[in-house]
Length: 386
Figure (tube, rainbow, N blue to C red):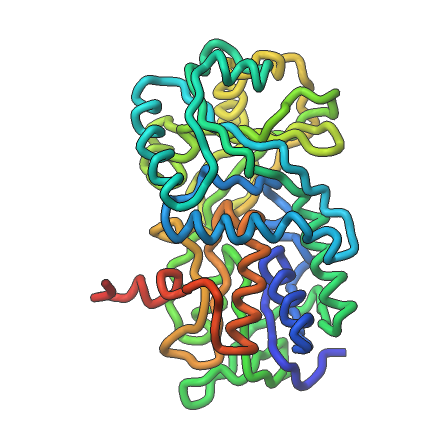
């Protein structure tokens, strides 16, 4: 039964909504989480598990990721569940002289933001990661890059939140936001009204749709990522891996249209290797395509030849919540009191989940956050914003 009131309403039971629910419950707030489908049915269940720091923009984005990464070390113990967190370190693979020049600058800026990262030559990269071919002429390496199981993480957060007093309602869709005198005062599900002093939009790629219910324009667009999953094999990868081009495509979408797609790889605890991913603006179409999967395979095979002999068992596509500047939208909304944004993480939702949940919970319970959120607020997209 849907209650008539809640301490706070969270829309979305992906990893971000789950993290917020958990941290709110730890504060003694009993949130009500609405999920129109099943938990982790959106982006959180259709992604890899990289907690990768080298792909973050130097500056506030990277500093936010560093704060989140620190919290992962003890998170499994805190939640009382395995989340399959591992810290093998990560490498960003460089295949051209032009990429070396770009990554030298990128590494310098990342170091200024506090990341432990270095540039190594191709021979050293192959010593550390023997599966790499001679196509890799250099790489960057950080010992902080890690991985986690997205499903295990999301459900561990939800279980811990529920144990602390949160309620999770699956299969219940929010179809309206109640607004009274410029303040969000609750939500509607069907013909039911649920009153709450705070409403959190944590719906990922659907965040713009929820925003429109409250009269807000939220510049979050779905961006499809297709991923290959191989059969389980003995340990092949020693590190989390991405390409230097992956970093470029992430922040310059036009490169994807010109054939500049990068790649990312991780080997899960099960032995399966996840290889991704495309970055396509195709609306809400989650289907995989022959061209997309073939492009991923053709990019990775010359770099890691051993993968040519590993069977593919399935493919899947997920929708990443893209914002125009590549940063999430977090915090209060100036024009609508009581409405809080926590979406737009694109491919960083897993990596930023630990800190996002903590910050939003702190904002709701104390009105303050230990990490500044001004640069992440919705208002940065408004006309005339600095």
